[in-house]
Amino acid sequence: MKLAALYDVHGMPWALEAVLRELDDEDVRLVVYGGDLLDGPFPDRAYALARSVEFSFVRGNCERVPSDWDRKLLSEDDLWFLAQQPLTRSFDSVRYCHAAPEDDMPITTVFTPDEMLLERFGSGTVVIGHTHHQFDRRVGDLRVVNAGSVGMPYEGEVAAFWTLVVDGEPQFRKTAFDVERAIREIEASGWPGAKAFVAENLRVAVTRDEAVAQLEGR
Image (cartoon, rainbow, N blue to C red; front, side):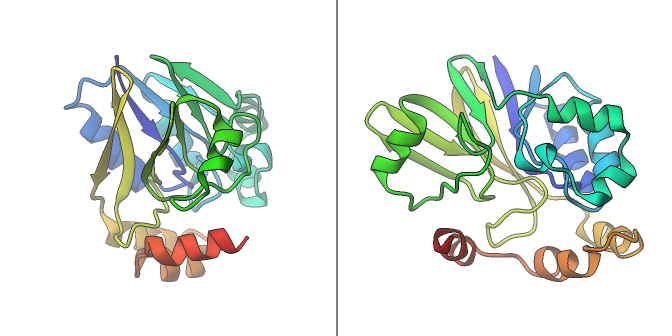
């Protein structure tokens, strides 16, 4: 089975659309959305795009507690649907969750201690997101893969970062999108977070080291 793990879209339809176009050439049978589709400039457009393909959802913290902007642009039925999604799903013996199998908030980075990974995830292959940077960690029988972020990556480059999973084997991918168009439409959107988001995530690229230092500080 070939599927795409798309995490942390954060209401960025331009990035998601670019990835979905790329999937047309990959013969992907299923898209697993790993949480935090919401909490960004255009959650309604991102949600409509997400449902345009064969999909499965995993709930993230932003679906559990949607913002006022999300509530303004999405219907109560749509918000209810997203909030009711499970914390984990499994395909080809790979588990998919937003942050951890039993909690959508734990911080896991490339530097999280091995013993904490084992306590949090157990064994097998687990694909996560939440911390917006790709990594592939192995501790004994455990493999923890961060799929990256489609809409708000911390990779030192403005692009959509995601993971292709072929017969249970994750492969990191990166897709370019029209950043200037995204900036123009976000600045005209009326979204309260527009100015800060553009300045911090589109006109510059947050590096992994910067992000991990802040995340580990929590």
